[in-house]
Image 1 (cartoon, rainbow, N blue to C red):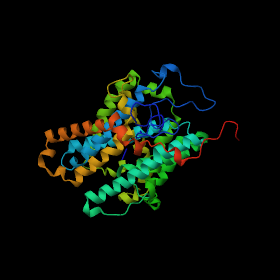
Image 2 (cartoon, helix red, strand yellow; image 1 turned 30 degrees about the vertical axis):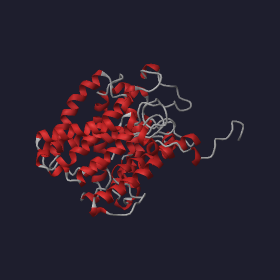
Image 3 (cartoon, rainbow, N blue to C red; image 1 turned 180 degrees about the vertical axis):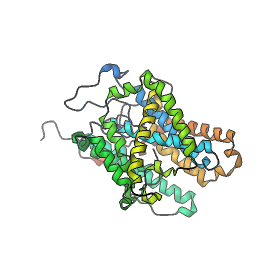
Image 4 (cartoon, one colour; image 1 turned 120 degrees about the vertical axis):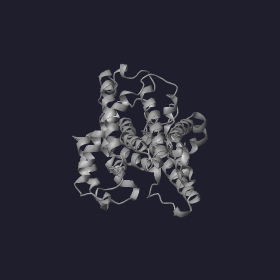
Amino acid sequence: MFQLPRTNTLSPGRTKTGNSVLPAPRKEPSPGHGPAAPAGSAAPAAHHFPSAGRDPFFDNAKYLAIVLVAMGHAWEPLTGHSRAAGALYLLVYTFHMPAFIVISGYFSRSFDARPDRVRRLVTGVAVPYVLFEAAYSLFRNWADDSASQAISLLDPWYLTWFLVALFVWRLTAPVWRVVRHPVAVALVIAALASSSPAIGDDLELQRVLQFLPYFVLGMCLRAEHFHLARHRVVRVLSVPVGLAALTVCYWAAPRMDRAWLYHRTSAQELGAPWWAGPVMTAALFCCSLALTVSFFAWVPRRRTWFTALGAGTLYGYLLHGFLAKGSRFGGWYDHGWIHTPPGQVAVTALAVVVVTALCTPPVQRVFHFAIEPRMPWAFRPAPSPGTR
């Protein structure tokens, strides 16, 4: 699919160009460090950030979100046999990527065309996209005899679409800082895209445009907004909101085409009239925002045993896809026991354990060359301070 760049997008607890399901521009590969306040604005009040370095809240949110991503992928083959699995799948897919994207937008607020930030965008997003798109394509051709096809960087497969989207969104960040009503403009763009089948599949532009409002919203947020989301009142209200959403998802599971939640096709391609695109865009934005706030309300603010793993979520995101797809190609879900309640619990637990392991420092050290490469040989040296 799947929050998370230099600040840490989803990389282990390091303070360098971490990428994670939220690769970052400067040192913002993902939400781990608070971004520098844009010029002319005051820095966030100190009490909004528990530590002088990384805010544990964002690393916790990234880890929990990547766990939900892995659980959703594990549940997908179960949805045809279990209405409960289908309801949980719809619930998670309503907000887990929006939450990642909001955080990614928040840590992209200060992105500009400064050379060091462009270099980090290339090494933290573009290079991993090229490497993993090629790796996924080769894996698919090897594991699935019926899916043999050439590698194409214009046709992101499975999880790599997020890297394409993040690259495009980051490049447009300066635009959203000068637009008068950025979220409204982004929603209009998303609505128009949802009713424009001519956009096609190249670079997953439908997803890039339909998920754009969440990125722009993240750019508009400040530290105090996340602080408010963790207020006790919001936490209390999030319980009935979550229960109501789960009830609706249980009702909708056998009735709703879940492709609406993927945001990768237009309304007409889903067999709906053109006006259903804008309507669903607005409705899903409201629902996703409500559940995202509810999710943030329950994310721990203090350091926990999994806080350090939040810095390595990009590793978990990109690597777990091989196991998720491999389970389909290998027919793991063909066994009847998997579709029983104990089997579903076991599959869920396995997904959590696997993605957690893939976020750990040892895995990061092994795959650092592909996900957070250092490529000084590829760029011109920085000009000396006195050079114009």
